[in-house]
Length: 410
Image 1: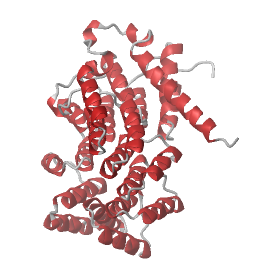
Image 2 (image 1 turned 90 degrees about the vertical axis):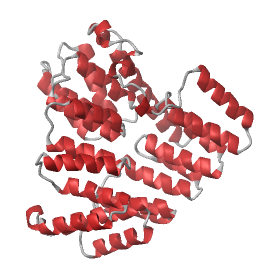
Image 3 (image 1 turned 90 degrees about the horizontal axis):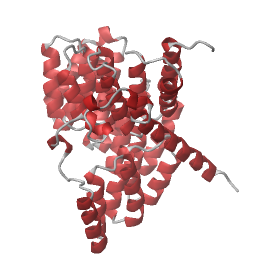
Image 4 (image 1 turned 180 degrees about the vertical axis):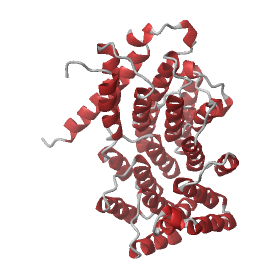
Protein backbone atom coordinates (compact mmCIF):
# COMPACT_ATOMS: atom_id res chain seq x y z
CA UNK A 1 0.00 0.00 0.00
CA UNK A 2 1.94 3.06 -1.23
CA UNK A 3 0.00 5.83 0.53
CA UNK A 4 -0.80 5.06 4.14
CA UNK A 5 -2.69 7.62 6.17
CA UNK A 6 -3.80 7.61 9.79
CA UNK A 7 -7.03 5.78 8.88
CA UNK A 8 -5.22 2.84 7.27
CA UNK A 9 -2.79 2.63 10.19
CA UNK A 10 -5.71 2.70 12.64
CA UNK A 11 -7.36 -0.24 10.87
CA UNK A 12 -4.31 -2.52 11.00
CA UNK A 13 -3.30 -1.49 14.54
CA UNK A 14 -6.88 -2.01 15.72
CA UNK A 15 -7.24 -5.43 14.11
CA UNK A 16 -4.12 -6.76 15.83
CA UNK A 17 -5.17 -5.14 19.11
CA UNK A 18 -8.64 -6.73 19.01
CA UNK A 19 -7.29 -10.13 17.90
CA UNK A 20 -5.04 -10.54 20.94
CA UNK A 21 -1.72 -9.68 19.29
CA UNK A 22 -0.85 -6.90 21.72
CA UNK A 23 2.88 -6.62 21.05
CA UNK A 24 2.34 -6.74 17.28
CA UNK A 25 -0.18 -3.91 17.56
CA UNK A 26 2.19 -1.79 19.65
CA UNK A 27 5.06 -2.62 17.31
CA UNK A 28 3.06 -1.36 14.33
CA UNK A 29 2.29 1.86 16.18
CA UNK A 30 5.99 2.39 16.92
CA UNK A 31 6.79 1.69 13.28
CA UNK A 32 4.22 4.27 12.16
CA UNK A 33 5.80 6.84 14.46
CA UNK A 34 9.40 6.05 13.52
CA UNK A 35 9.18 5.45 9.77
CA UNK A 36 6.43 7.81 8.61
CA UNK A 37 5.20 11.34 9.07
CA UNK A 38 1.77 10.08 10.13
CA UNK A 39 0.87 11.04 13.67
CA UNK A 40 -1.78 9.38 15.87
CA UNK A 41 -5.21 10.85 16.44
CA UNK A 42 -7.66 10.26 19.27
CA UNK A 43 -8.81 7.05 17.58
CA UNK A 44 -5.30 5.59 17.25
CA UNK A 45 -4.28 5.97 20.86
CA UNK A 46 -7.24 4.07 22.42
CA UNK A 47 -6.38 1.12 20.17
CA UNK A 48 -2.78 1.17 21.36
CA UNK A 49 -3.85 1.54 25.00
CA UNK A 50 -6.11 -1.48 24.60
CA UNK A 51 -3.09 -3.46 23.39
CA UNK A 52 -1.05 -2.18 26.35
CA UNK A 53 -3.65 -3.46 28.81
CA UNK A 54 -3.41 -6.93 27.22
CA UNK A 55 0.38 -6.95 27.31
CA UNK A 56 2.23 -8.44 30.31
CA UNK A 57 4.69 -5.54 30.02
CA UNK A 58 2.72 -3.05 32.11
CA UNK A 59 5.30 -0.29 31.68
CA UNK A 60 4.19 0.08 28.07
CA UNK A 61 0.89 1.51 29.25
CA UNK A 62 2.65 4.14 31.36
CA UNK A 63 4.88 5.11 28.42
CA UNK A 64 1.97 5.51 26.00
CA UNK A 65 0.08 7.45 28.68
CA UNK A 66 2.90 9.99 28.84
CA UNK A 67 2.86 10.25 25.05
CA UNK A 68 -0.90 10.95 25.14
CA UNK A 69 -0.26 13.88 27.48
CA UNK A 70 2.64 15.20 25.42
CA UNK A 71 0.56 15.14 22.25
CA UNK A 72 -2.22 17.11 23.94
CA UNK A 73 -4.81 14.34 24.15
CA UNK A 74 -5.25 14.64 27.91
CA UNK A 75 -8.65 16.30 27.44
CA UNK A 76 -9.91 13.84 24.81
CA UNK A 77 -12.90 11.83 26.06
CA UNK A 78 -11.91 8.85 23.86
CA UNK A 79 -8.30 8.78 25.08
CA UNK A 80 -9.13 9.47 28.73
CA UNK A 81 -11.75 6.72 28.73
CA UNK A 82 -9.26 4.28 27.19
CA UNK A 83 -6.70 5.20 29.84
CA UNK A 84 -9.17 4.58 32.67
CA UNK A 85 -10.16 1.20 31.21
CA UNK A 86 -6.49 0.28 30.64
CA UNK A 87 -5.55 0.96 34.26
CA UNK A 88 -8.62 -0.94 35.47
CA UNK A 89 -7.60 -3.95 33.36
CA UNK A 90 -4.07 -3.72 34.76
CA UNK A 91 -5.39 -3.69 38.31
CA UNK A 92 -4.01 -0.19 38.91
CA UNK A 93 -7.25 1.04 40.36
CA UNK A 94 -5.76 4.13 42.04
CA UNK A 95 -4.39 5.36 38.73
CA UNK A 96 -7.73 4.72 37.09
CA UNK A 97 -9.64 6.58 39.80
CA UNK A 98 -7.31 9.59 39.60
CA UNK A 99 -8.03 9.87 35.87
CA UNK A 100 -11.73 9.21 36.40
CA UNK A 101 -12.02 12.02 38.96
CA UNK A 102 -10.19 14.47 36.68
CA UNK A 103 -12.54 13.87 33.75
CA UNK A 104 -15.11 16.58 33.08
CA UNK A 105 -17.45 14.25 31.18
CA UNK A 106 -18.17 10.65 32.25
CA UNK A 107 -20.43 8.13 30.59
CA UNK A 108 -21.98 4.84 31.67
CA UNK A 109 -19.11 2.85 30.13
CA UNK A 110 -16.62 4.61 32.40
CA UNK A 111 -18.75 4.14 35.50
CA UNK A 112 -19.23 0.46 34.66
CA UNK A 113 -15.49 -0.07 34.12
CA UNK A 114 -14.56 1.66 37.39
CA UNK A 115 -17.24 -0.18 39.36
CA UNK A 116 -16.14 -3.53 37.93
CA UNK A 117 -12.51 -2.68 38.63
CA UNK A 118 -13.18 -2.01 42.30
CA UNK A 119 -15.09 -5.27 42.68
CA UNK A 120 -12.39 -7.27 40.90
CA UNK A 121 -9.83 -5.83 43.30
CA UNK A 122 -11.96 -6.87 46.28
CA UNK A 123 -12.90 -3.27 47.10
CA UNK A 124 -16.65 -3.87 47.27
CA UNK A 125 -17.39 -0.93 49.59
CA UNK A 126 -15.66 1.59 47.31
CA UNK A 127 -17.35 -0.02 44.34
CA UNK A 128 -20.81 0.32 45.85
CA UNK A 129 -20.13 3.96 46.66
CA UNK A 130 -19.39 4.55 42.98
CA UNK A 131 -22.47 2.52 42.04
CA UNK A 132 -24.67 4.86 44.12
CA UNK A 133 -23.12 7.83 42.34
CA UNK A 134 -23.89 6.14 39.04
CA UNK A 135 -27.54 5.64 40.04
CA UNK A 136 -27.91 9.25 41.23
CA UNK A 137 -26.49 10.40 37.87
CA UNK A 138 -29.37 8.47 36.23
CA UNK A 139 -27.22 6.22 34.07
CA UNK A 140 -28.94 3.09 32.79
CA UNK A 141 -28.01 -0.20 34.46
CA UNK A 142 -27.18 -3.14 32.22
CA UNK A 143 -26.26 -6.78 32.71
CA UNK A 144 -22.55 -5.98 33.12
CA UNK A 145 -23.32 -3.68 36.06
CA UNK A 146 -25.55 -6.37 37.60
CA UNK A 147 -22.75 -8.94 37.43
CA UNK A 148 -20.42 -6.56 39.31
CA UNK A 149 -23.19 -5.69 41.77
CA UNK A 150 -23.87 -9.33 42.62
CA UNK A 151 -20.13 -9.91 43.01
CA UNK A 152 -19.97 -7.00 45.46
CA UNK A 153 -22.89 -8.42 47.44
CA UNK A 154 -21.14 -11.79 47.52
CA UNK A 155 -17.89 -10.26 48.79
CA UNK A 156 -19.74 -8.44 51.58
CA UNK A 157 -21.98 -11.38 52.45
CA UNK A 158 -25.00 -9.14 51.82
CA UNK A 159 -27.58 -11.82 51.06
CA UNK A 160 -30.54 -9.43 51.37
CA UNK A 161 -29.10 -7.02 48.84
CA UNK A 162 -28.13 -9.90 46.57
CA UNK A 163 -31.76 -11.05 46.54
CA UNK A 164 -32.83 -7.52 45.60
CA UNK A 165 -30.48 -7.59 42.61
CA UNK A 166 -31.84 -11.02 41.73
CA UNK A 167 -35.35 -9.57 41.73
CA UNK A 168 -34.25 -6.70 39.50
CA UNK A 169 -32.89 -9.17 36.95
CA UNK A 170 -36.17 -11.10 36.94
CA UNK A 171 -38.29 -7.93 36.59
CA UNK A 172 -36.14 -6.69 33.72
CA UNK A 173 -36.09 -10.06 31.98
CA UNK A 174 -38.30 -8.82 29.14
CA UNK A 175 -35.95 -5.90 28.53
CA UNK A 176 -32.86 -8.08 28.56
CA UNK A 177 -34.21 -10.72 26.21
CA UNK A 178 -35.74 -14.18 26.60
CA UNK A 179 -34.22 -16.05 29.56
CA UNK A 180 -31.32 -13.60 29.66
CA UNK A 181 -32.38 -12.25 33.04
CA UNK A 182 -32.13 -15.70 34.60
CA UNK A 183 -28.91 -16.42 32.72
CA UNK A 184 -27.31 -13.23 34.08
CA UNK A 185 -28.48 -14.09 37.58
CA UNK A 186 -27.15 -17.66 37.36
CA UNK A 187 -23.84 -16.46 35.97
CA UNK A 188 -23.49 -13.75 38.60
CA UNK A 189 -24.46 -16.00 41.51
CA UNK A 190 -22.02 -18.70 40.39
CA UNK A 191 -19.29 -16.08 40.23
CA UNK A 192 -20.29 -14.66 43.61
CA UNK A 193 -20.27 -18.04 45.33
CA UNK A 194 -17.02 -19.00 43.59
CA UNK A 195 -15.17 -15.86 44.68
CA UNK A 196 -16.64 -16.20 48.17
CA UNK A 197 -15.21 -19.71 48.49
CA UNK A 198 -18.50 -21.64 48.58
CA UNK A 199 -17.20 -24.47 46.44
CA UNK A 200 -20.13 -26.91 46.61
CA UNK A 201 -22.82 -24.32 45.84
CA UNK A 202 -20.92 -22.75 42.97
CA UNK A 203 -20.25 -26.07 41.22
CA UNK A 204 -23.81 -27.29 41.87
CA UNK A 205 -25.29 -24.12 40.33
CA UNK A 206 -22.94 -24.41 37.37
CA UNK A 207 -24.00 -28.00 36.68
CA UNK A 208 -27.70 -27.06 37.01
CA UNK A 209 -27.24 -24.16 34.60
CA UNK A 210 -25.70 -26.49 32.00
CA UNK A 211 -28.57 -28.97 32.44
CA UNK A 212 -31.11 -26.19 31.86
CA UNK A 213 -29.47 -25.43 28.54
CA UNK A 214 -28.03 -22.05 29.53
CA UNK A 215 -24.65 -21.60 27.87
CA UNK A 216 -21.88 -20.51 30.22
CA UNK A 217 -19.65 -17.58 29.31
CA UNK A 218 -16.20 -16.44 30.42
CA UNK A 219 -17.66 -14.94 33.63
CA UNK A 220 -19.34 -18.22 34.60
CA UNK A 221 -16.16 -20.16 34.09
CA UNK A 222 -14.23 -17.62 36.15
CA UNK A 223 -16.65 -18.23 39.02
CA UNK A 224 -16.45 -22.00 38.92
CA UNK A 225 -12.65 -21.94 38.47
CA UNK A 226 -12.39 -19.62 41.47
CA UNK A 227 -14.44 -22.13 43.45
CA UNK A 228 -12.04 -24.90 42.40
CA UNK A 229 -9.12 -22.74 43.54
CA UNK A 230 -10.69 -22.23 46.99
CA UNK A 231 -11.38 -25.96 47.31
CA UNK A 232 -8.08 -27.17 45.84
CA UNK A 233 -9.96 -29.14 43.17
CA UNK A 234 -7.16 -29.41 40.63
CA UNK A 235 -8.71 -32.09 38.42
CA UNK A 236 -11.99 -30.19 38.18
CA UNK A 237 -10.19 -26.96 37.33
CA UNK A 238 -8.49 -28.73 34.43
CA UNK A 239 -11.87 -30.16 33.37
CA UNK A 240 -13.50 -26.71 33.31
CA UNK A 241 -10.55 -25.18 31.47
CA UNK A 242 -10.92 -27.82 28.73
CA UNK A 243 -14.69 -27.33 28.75
CA UNK A 244 -14.19 -23.68 27.80
CA UNK A 245 -12.84 -24.86 24.45
CA UNK A 246 -16.02 -26.91 23.87
CA UNK A 247 -18.01 -23.67 24.14
CA UNK A 248 -15.47 -21.89 21.91
CA UNK A 249 -14.46 -19.55 24.74
CA UNK A 250 -10.83 -18.46 24.70
CA UNK A 251 -9.43 -18.53 28.26
CA UNK A 252 -8.08 -15.20 29.46
CA UNK A 253 -5.25 -14.58 31.90
CA UNK A 254 -7.70 -14.45 34.82
CA UNK A 255 -8.84 -18.00 34.02
CA UNK A 256 -5.26 -19.22 33.87
CA UNK A 257 -4.59 -17.38 37.15
CA UNK A 258 -7.40 -19.33 38.84
CA UNK A 259 -6.00 -22.67 37.64
CA UNK A 260 -2.46 -21.69 38.71
CA UNK A 261 -3.87 -20.59 42.07
CA UNK A 262 -5.69 -23.91 42.43
CA UNK A 263 -2.53 -25.92 41.75
CA UNK A 264 -0.50 -23.73 44.10
CA UNK A 265 -2.98 -24.07 46.96
CA UNK A 266 -2.79 -27.84 46.50
CA UNK A 267 1.02 -27.69 46.77
CA UNK A 268 1.63 -28.64 43.13
CA UNK A 269 4.14 -25.85 42.65
CA UNK A 270 6.47 -27.46 40.10
CA UNK A 271 3.40 -28.43 38.07
CA UNK A 272 2.06 -24.88 38.36
CA UNK A 273 5.38 -23.50 37.13
CA UNK A 274 5.28 -25.79 34.09
CA UNK A 275 1.64 -24.83 33.52
CA UNK A 276 2.73 -21.18 33.26
CA UNK A 277 5.49 -22.06 30.81
CA UNK A 278 3.05 -23.96 28.58
CA UNK A 279 0.39 -21.24 28.58
CA UNK A 280 -0.31 -19.75 25.12
CA UNK A 281 -0.02 -16.25 26.63
CA UNK A 282 2.65 -14.71 28.83
CA UNK A 283 1.77 -14.94 32.55
CA UNK A 284 1.02 -11.64 34.24
CA UNK A 285 1.34 -10.55 37.86
CA UNK A 286 -1.87 -12.32 38.90
CA UNK A 287 -0.73 -15.71 37.59
CA UNK A 288 2.83 -15.41 38.89
CA UNK A 289 1.64 -13.94 42.20
CA UNK A 290 -0.67 -16.91 42.80
CA UNK A 291 2.23 -19.33 42.42
CA UNK A 292 4.54 -17.21 44.59
CA UNK A 293 1.92 -17.21 47.36
CA UNK A 294 1.81 -21.00 47.18
CA UNK A 295 5.60 -21.15 47.43
CA UNK A 296 5.41 -19.08 50.60
CA UNK A 297 2.79 -21.39 52.15
CA UNK A 298 4.68 -24.59 51.31
CA UNK A 299 8.21 -23.20 51.75
CA UNK A 300 9.32 -24.00 48.20
CA UNK A 301 12.31 -21.69 47.79
CA UNK A 302 13.49 -23.07 44.44
CA UNK A 303 10.27 -22.36 42.55
CA UNK A 304 9.72 -19.20 44.62
CA UNK A 305 13.05 -17.72 43.53
CA UNK A 306 12.36 -18.35 39.85
CA UNK A 307 8.83 -16.94 40.01
CA UNK A 308 9.97 -13.91 42.04
CA UNK A 309 12.59 -13.10 39.39
CA UNK A 310 9.90 -13.06 36.71
CA UNK A 311 7.70 -10.82 38.83
CA UNK A 312 10.58 -8.44 39.44
CA UNK A 313 11.21 -8.31 35.69
CA UNK A 314 7.60 -7.16 35.25
CA UNK A 315 7.81 -4.52 37.99
CA UNK A 316 11.25 -4.11 39.54
CA UNK A 317 10.09 -1.33 41.85
CA UNK A 318 7.35 -3.26 43.63
CA UNK A 319 8.56 -3.99 47.16
CA UNK A 320 6.00 -6.74 47.81
CA UNK A 321 7.84 -9.28 45.66
CA UNK A 322 11.13 -8.72 47.46
CA UNK A 323 9.42 -8.84 50.86
CA UNK A 324 7.69 -12.13 50.00
CA UNK A 325 10.96 -13.66 48.80
CA UNK A 326 12.78 -12.46 51.93
CA UNK A 327 10.00 -13.97 54.05
CA UNK A 328 10.36 -17.22 52.13
CA UNK A 329 14.10 -17.28 52.88
CA UNK A 330 13.46 -16.63 56.57
CA UNK A 331 10.73 -19.29 56.81
CA UNK A 332 13.17 -21.92 55.49
CA UNK A 333 16.04 -20.87 57.74
CA UNK A 334 18.03 -18.97 55.10
CA UNK A 335 18.35 -15.88 57.27
CA UNK A 336 21.57 -14.58 55.71
CA UNK A 337 20.00 -14.46 52.27
CA UNK A 338 16.89 -12.78 53.67
CA UNK A 339 18.98 -10.10 55.35
CA UNK A 340 21.10 -9.60 52.21
CA UNK A 341 17.94 -9.08 50.16
CA UNK A 342 16.56 -6.55 52.65
CA UNK A 343 19.87 -4.70 52.66
CA UNK A 344 19.88 -4.65 48.87
CA UNK A 345 16.37 -3.14 48.94
CA UNK A 346 17.63 -0.36 51.18
CA UNK A 347 20.56 0.36 48.86
CA UNK A 348 18.24 0.50 45.85
CA UNK A 349 15.74 2.60 47.83
CA UNK A 350 12.90 0.19 47.18
CA UNK A 351 10.28 1.31 49.68
CA UNK A 352 7.69 -0.82 51.45
CA UNK A 353 5.32 2.15 51.49
CA UNK A 354 2.08 1.19 49.68
CA UNK A 355 1.44 2.83 46.32
CA UNK A 356 -1.59 4.77 47.57
CA UNK A 357 0.63 6.61 50.08
CA UNK A 358 3.00 7.84 47.39
CA UNK A 359 2.49 10.93 45.27
CA UNK A 360 1.14 10.11 41.84
CA UNK A 361 2.93 11.41 38.78
CA UNK A 362 2.46 10.10 35.27
CA UNK A 363 5.51 11.92 33.97
CA UNK A 364 7.85 10.43 36.58
CA UNK A 365 6.65 6.93 35.74
CA UNK A 366 8.11 6.90 32.26
CA UNK A 367 10.63 9.73 32.15
CA UNK A 368 12.80 8.90 35.12
CA UNK A 369 11.58 11.74 37.29
CA UNK A 370 11.93 14.50 34.70
CA UNK A 371 8.96 16.79 34.29
CA UNK A 372 7.24 16.73 30.91
CA UNK A 373 7.66 20.48 30.47
CA UNK A 374 11.44 20.06 30.40
CA UNK A 375 11.40 17.45 27.63
CA UNK A 376 10.60 18.25 24.04
CA UNK A 377 8.32 16.19 21.83
CA UNK A 378 11.40 15.19 19.81
CA UNK A 379 12.47 12.94 22.69
CA UNK A 380 9.83 10.41 21.72
CA UNK A 381 11.24 9.96 18.21
CA UNK A 382 14.91 10.09 19.20
CA UNK A 383 15.10 7.25 21.69
CA UNK A 384 13.18 8.69 24.67
CA UNK A 385 9.81 7.15 25.44
CA UNK A 386 9.68 5.43 22.07
CA UNK A 387 13.09 3.89 22.68
CA UNK A 388 11.95 2.45 26.00
CA UNK A 389 8.76 1.08 24.48
CA UNK A 390 10.55 -0.41 21.49
CA UNK A 391 13.15 -2.09 23.71
CA UNK A 392 10.37 -3.71 25.75
CA UNK A 393 8.59 -4.99 22.63
CA UNK A 394 11.84 -6.28 21.10
CA UNK A 395 12.88 -8.03 24.32
CA UNK A 396 9.49 -9.69 24.68
CA UNK A 397 9.49 -10.94 21.08
CA UNK A 398 13.00 -12.32 21.54
CA UNK A 399 11.91 -14.13 24.70
CA UNK A 400 8.96 -15.75 22.90
CA UNK A 401 11.21 -16.86 20.03
CA UNK A 402 13.70 -18.44 22.43
CA UNK A 403 10.83 -20.13 24.26
CA UNK A 404 9.56 -21.69 21.00
CA UNK A 405 13.06 -22.85 20.03
CA UNK A 406 13.56 -24.36 23.48
CA UNK A 407 10.39 -26.43 23.13
CA UNK A 408 11.48 -28.05 19.83
CA UNK A 409 12.42 -31.70 20.15
CA UNK A 410 16.06 -32.52 19.29
